[in-house]
Length: 258
Picture (cartoon, rainbow, N blue to C red):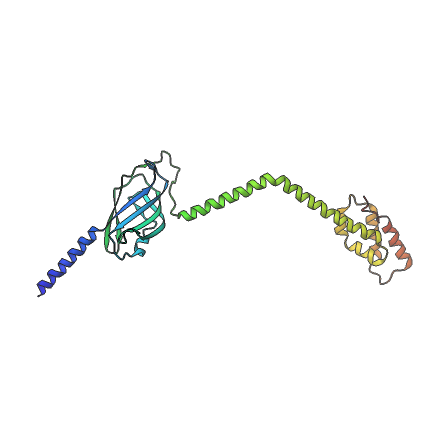
């Protein structure tokens, strides 16, 4: 009885091995070129069959794997059973040509099974000149795509600024000039109507704002500052003190006249 059980177990194991050996794979590259160079990026279709109830999670681990010592699977675009045959698993992805040396056979580790994968004749060409430290970065195609978008966007912004810099400068100068004219107009009106202590002290307090607007600062401006400074801390101004401040201000009243 034990011998019969052992014999049946051996047959079951042998059958499973034979079934496993029947599973195979094939990689097809979507390229019209007669040969590929190191660093090229090409789309590929990997087919694995027959594979019932496939563990797609195991197959997805093939991303960032080097096939045939030359083709680096940078990104899996899609992974699903074939529409024509559910036992055929189709993996579509982008491959970098990482090395010109290649082998004709590659084995995929799927659970406890080694699945042989073949590829049609693969013609690879080595770069004639390589920069020092040449390598293909292990990065996804998606990152490369967005990097290009960012670079192109920055270049467009720089180009627009170069083309329109003169107009932008003119607009800025015009806006600055407009702001200056508005400020001059405000202080011109303030100077013209100033007549009492409150007006004079307000003009004195705002001197740092209006002095830069003057075409030139005269001694009469400094005289007004000195005289007002002598009286501004007094509680009340005598009539003589008021007239002294008023007279000194009259000399600068029309500072903003055109």
